[in-house]
Amino acid sequence: MFNDFFVIIGLTLGVMLLKAAVLYGLAIIFKIRDSARWLFTLSLAQAGEFGFVLLSFSVQNHVLPNDIAQTLSLVVALSMFLTPGLFILFDKVILPRYEKQSNDREADTVDERGTVMIAGMGRFGQIVNRLLVANEVKTVALDVRADQVDNMRQIGTKAFFGDASKPDILHTAGIEETKLLVVAIDNQEASIELVKYVKHTYPHVKILTRAFDRGHGYQLRQAGADYIESETYHSALELGAKTMNCLGFHPFFVEQQKATYKSIEDKQSDRLYEGWKGGAEGERFDNNYRDLFIELEGSSATPCKSTAMTSTRANAAGHRHQKAMQTSSKNSLLGLVTC
Image (cartoon, rainbow, N blue to C red; front, top):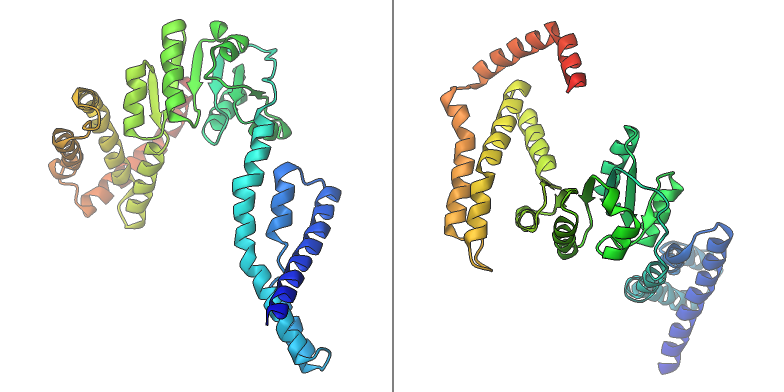
């Protein structure tokens, strides 16, 4: 029994090692780099479900004896069972080593100066950067992840490797000559400290920041940020509007309600912030704050009641709005361009 156990274990490891060696060689040939090479190798090292089909076919056609086929079936099953462990090995051991090696390299020498400095070139910062560059605004983009910087360069986006939360990196990147700083780094604590430092040391620089949520936004405001944009607020508002559209609400009515909701929230933002700031640490969102937020949501429904916008009247208003928009489309477009 124990001999069979060790045979099965040995065969399983042998099959996986042999397949991994072939896959690693293919990864080199096809120039799969760094940690992606190991991910490719480990994710496909198991024998695979097709092995069961081949073994069953072999037994039916008397190519393999039944006992050998059963042993090999155990090998296939065990290799598949071990695969999640390989992913854990990759995530906990291999990937951190590559990230550390990548991020241990020296910061890039920033040989350019820009009107806008962007700290963080993740999913948020890179969109800001693309919009500015498309409109011929000079930017200096920094990111603490070397692999992200390399990826940006591969698609033609100029970015520099460096930790924007470090004063010497900011100085090297030309923060003194920058008019605007966009903070879009993923580390919330680091973003708050960066805002504090820049606001204190370079008060002429206007700071625009990305907030993960309401609480983070209040912390950034307290640190001195000039403008704060929640990364999920507008997308959630748009999705809510799309949901109303799918439910049959007229587009004009939906846009009106969306604008009303945002307008009231903007008006209440100072009160919400003061309520948060006045609370003790750990009790920032107390009953008073919740009552204020309930009042905000209740107020957003008021326009619907006050204007008595039933479905029929909403449709009528929508049609009038569309007609007006059609007759003044050229003027509207000119107005948008002028703004």
